[in-house]
Structures are given as structure tokens and as C-alpha cells.
Amino acid sequence: MAQERTLGLIKPDAVANNHIGNIVKRVVDEGFTIVALRMLRMSKATAEQFYDVHADKPFYGELTDYMSSGPCVAMVLEADGAIVKWRDLMGATNPEKAAEGTLRKLYAESFTMNATHGSDAPETAAREISFFFATSEIFGR
Ligand code: UDP
Ligand code: MG
Image 1 (tube, rainbow, N blue to C red):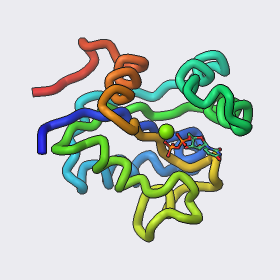
Image 2: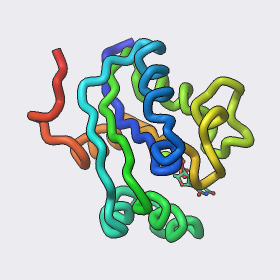
Image 3: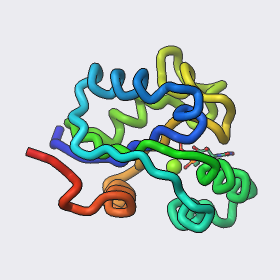
Image 4: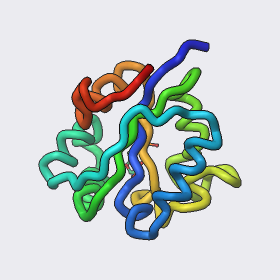
């Protein structure tokens, strides 16, 4: 499988619950290379833009309120098959359905406050990486 990059977020609930260290350690232990990392707080408008694909969903308001409620950690993760590998490590969107040992099973608070985000395809990874990081802030080899 080819080297690939994905956008990972440690969401506001996981930051507030002091799980940054646990999640970053897991990222490294699972073999990802962190090529960019930054703490940031999205405004409501920025969260709406980031999640515009979900604008027509009933959870859009709650989701964007939550995502703008406190800081996130944004990361660009590199690995063979990074997109699927990171989604597998996160586990199912609904933490009640997430497999044992996954980040959402371990650290999520609820369906909405589910600890982490990951891009779902190469096109979304490219969009989401450039949403948060300039090329000069990404330190690949
Ligand atoms: N979400 C929610 N209720 C739902 C579905 C999703 O609150 O019924 C939230 C949840 O925080 C999720 C985010 O919206 O992570 C984006 O949803 P998506 O279906 O893209 O899930 P993901 O790609 O994050 O697994
Ligand atoms: Mg998604």
C-alpha cells in the first residue's frame, strides 16, 4: 500500500478530558508519522465550513456548537494506507458500536462528542489537510 496522509483531529471533549497524550502515544505506537500538529479553536463559522458536507443533517447544529466549544488538536498523519488505518484506530462513529481498544471506545463521551475525527477518502484528506495547514507547516521527509 502507498504512503498516504490523513487529517486527524483530537476533538474538544478528548482535549478537555486530558486525553491528548494518550491519543498521540497511540498514534506513534501504531506506526504513524506525525508530519504536522497544532492546537486550535474553531469558531462556529469555521466548524460549519469544516463540516459543510453535513449541513442538511439534523445533528449539524449540535455538532458545530460542540466543535467550536473548545480547542482541538489537528494532526497530519502519514502511513501506508493512513486514511483507513486512522479510521480503524478511531473505531465506529457511535462509540457504543466501536470495537474494544479503539480510540472512540476508550475516550468518547457520546455519539456527538466522540473524541476524534478522521478524513474518509483521499479527496477529503487533501481538503481537510489544507483546511488547517499550509504546505510550509507540514514536515514530511
Ligand atoms: N454525528 C452526530 N450524530 C450522528 C452522526 C454524526 O452527532 O448521528 C457527529 C459525530 O461527532 C461525527 C460527526 O458528526 O463524528 C461527523 O459525522 P460522520 O458521519 O462524518 O462520522 P465520522 O466520519 O466522524 O466517523
Ligand atoms: Mg466523516
